[in-house]
Length: 202
Image (tube, rainbow, N blue to C red; front, side):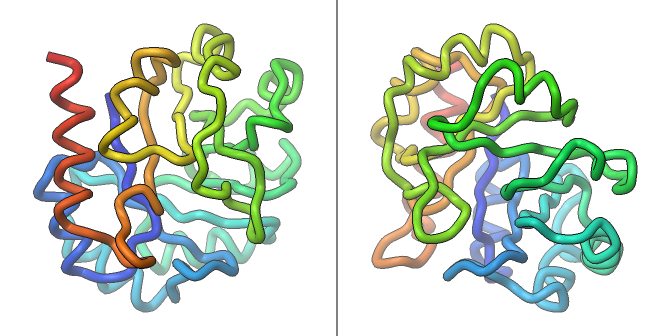
């Protein structure tokens, strides 16, 4: 079970997540309260072990801009979190995660977007990311059965992630606001989240 901690903004939090067993760290380059500049993300990324994959989150950005930022930061994976169309994929040259809100995802549009990973999130909020509220995980079970690399996001916390995994059986989980306190990443919650995910597999 892979774990992605998204919305990384500081080296301290990146190191804590990495040391605690996170498999992927997400940097948000789209408008968001968790947005980071490519320069700051690059400084963090270059100090992380190669075993931790660096993911860039983009929303309706051009392929040229995505590639420029990915190369500058040293990203491993591109996450597309807007209304991108499948024709962007061959232009990128990077492995991709395509995110869909649970209220806008169907087998048809997942099949039509042959990304390396599919991420299902809670319904859109103010920004293109989810609201951080849990949704009915039973709605995603059929996706996990069909997608061997489904990543579950949306309202996950250290307290509910084991139940979400039990129901959906995803390839991985993604968390951002669920490991924050007062809008900032909380090292204790990050450690507990990762411990709970990895522990539930034993």
